[in-house]
Amino acid sequence: MATRRHKLIHYYEDGEWELFDRETDPHELRSLYGRPEVAALQRGLLRELERLRRQLGVPARDNDAGRHPLYRPPPPLPPGNSIRPEVVVRDIAFAEGPAIDAAGNLYFVNFERRGTIGKRTPAGDVSLFVDLLDHLPVEGKRKPRLNGLKVSDDGSLVGADVGTGKLVAVSKDGKQVDVLAHSVGGERLAGVNDLALDKKGNIYFTVPDQHRVCRFHRESGVTEVVVEIPTGRPNGVGVTPTGRYLLVNDSANLRTFIADLYDGEVRDLRELIDFKPRGTPDDLTPAARRRLRQRIGTPDGMIFDAHGRVYIALWEGGVVHAVTVPQGRIIETYKTGGRRTTNAHFHSGDLYVTVADLGQIVKLPLGVRGWKYSKGASE
Picture 1 (cartoon, one colour):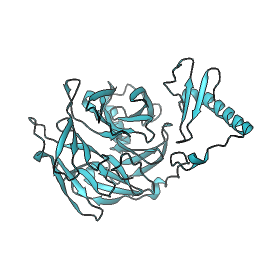
Picture 2 (cartoon, rainbow, N blue to C red):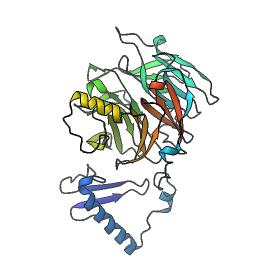
Picture 3 (cartoon, rainbow, N blue to C red):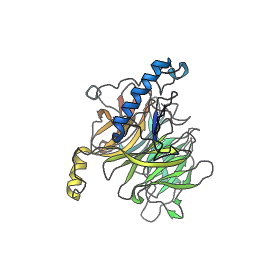
Picture 4 (cartoon, rainbow, N blue to C red):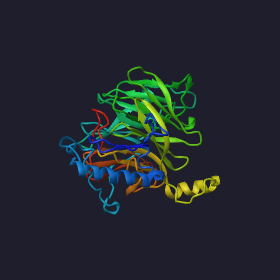
């Protein structure tokens, strides 16, 4: 529906909304839906839309949309105090990068020692999958070591090499490791921290020391900078199931950003959620900022469920927060048994979480389907 100035759009196929100010944004590039500054306007437009719907006899949703999993109201999450973490892997030198393929194989980094990838089969057998030193060179004092992992369409892995600053691909059998990107705009990448795939297989990855989020195009092989956060440290990153939003965790400032994705362009970066207590001053001393991080944790990795909710791991916080998108509201919090929670991945209704200080991967039985971000990934 539209007024002289504003347009409200409801996408039946996935249940998302957009709100545009056509006076200040005539090309309708920046959706205002869900932002606090337009809350009263949004409520009024929604009431008017409902009035018109009833007056004209328009159904609340069409039959096809009623079967779409992203449109139906998401099932409620179990209370945080009802979930107990179950250990599924031990003896990890630095637990990070859980990724699970469609067959149920769990991959993770730094098994027994840094610079490796471990594998846990559906039967529970755990073994060394890849030693990166057999495939990638040491660069001075820098050794190859992965952080984030994801599963591609063909079941191979893509990984963020935080050790030597590369984006890499690992074959399905673990016998080959190829470098996808090591520079952007002629500048070598610093340590690559985490990554995410979009529907086309393009890879978004974070480079904290250079304050950037980059994107590797699968078809062209071109790498470009898509987000810069000059005062922050981009960490976990994710593309929503609808492909409409890009999320980035800023571990330096304890917040998560959201940006719009339009035809491959990243636009209008803004804050989705600030994990700091309300009223926290911006000019904290370094010591006060360190204490705050230790108290509430810093946002690290993220993963989405099939209903578009994002699950954010908090380093030092020892928890995973479930957050609505694009509203940015914490709806549940789950303890992981340790303090340094790093990343997560769904499989068969369970959330698998890496806990670095314990050297473990734990399973949280949430009963929620994950978002199948690629043909080769689990859900």
